[in-house]
Image: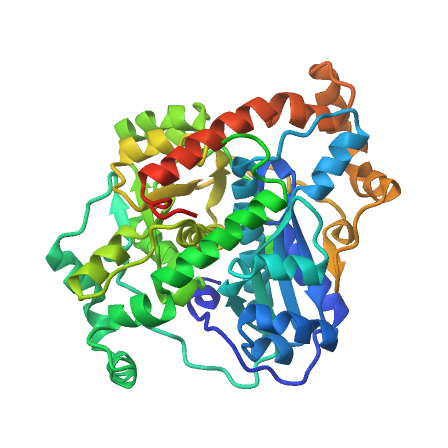
Length: 251
Length: 251
């Protein structure tokens, strides 16, 4: 079982084989068994299988080919709409139009998403997370017709693997991630050691050379996750939270 | 494997048996294999095993007894401190002092947390998530000495179960959680049907009576997750994000 988790690799190429509805249901049920705040289940899954809908979503994920190629695209949302409606039908006044409620929905949606992925891999499927979901939440909301109090958190593409890539071994050493009792801040030497293996990979060196950069870190700051993009997408996401009702009260 | 996920139940009572360091390491390694944004691994785990530290953390979790009773308390944090330091040592200018970066750290921390829990349960351990983590993030930051760009997201207590509670069967029906192609907003009848089973549980009826409430929803809005508390904790959390550096730029 731990082997299943440690053998995880992102799968971006899927075969033509469909995911049977009964299997998809089992995976979604397993997702819903994840722990969640007060058993409120303040999340929803939007399943995209229609080709036209996949094509509509693709630009939201920067046209990464998994979106149109995967048999199932799953958009996982924080959702207080259902819970609010229930409260209102039951003489209860919901107080979830605030940032804390959004974060609890976001965490619970993430835990459910990960359960879905573990279940999927245990059944021989391959998955890929699309972090682009929060960047273009405004557009995804329009396409999937998400009402107020529903915000997309992450997206998973799933299907039978066309080819199984090698396990990425390049996680940071555990000692660089785990702290005992209190946080022990990193010295210059610590940072050098933690990132040494990753920096020494041939693939990293190639990546740096191809992009005319001096260091691997510059690939992240100058190309992949730039300050300008992060700030732009932060503004988009905060506007989304306001529009969807999670900043109604003065925070 | 899916059975392991669907058999999940929250365990709040632990035996005296310790978690061996080698096992804890295996679980943490499995946690780190979860998908994460750009393989940046912008999360950290703080392991609390010291009795005095558990006692210090307990009030942050409203003195729920799991915190002092569990052999391991794991605080899972969004962490850009390590990544920022690496960038700065590598002639790269990090641009992660914004809300988007925090949310990506929060999601990735949550996925890793869930992998930890699945791995733990597969080894016979029981776990409990503490949603109180975001409510009292300011205090947890002080106790665990978390530097800027580190924010606690969730906490897990883990240990061998003293007793195995029954699986909570009361998840909402899948049809109430899953939408195909677009979000289909809930009618009054839909809401009635989705919540019917839960409302009809003997335990729900008892809970309502004990608290002198009229409906199960009122238990949530008036007692467990009140508007006043949510608004208070929203303010705390937003101040934490500002203090920890995730609202440096105008969003």
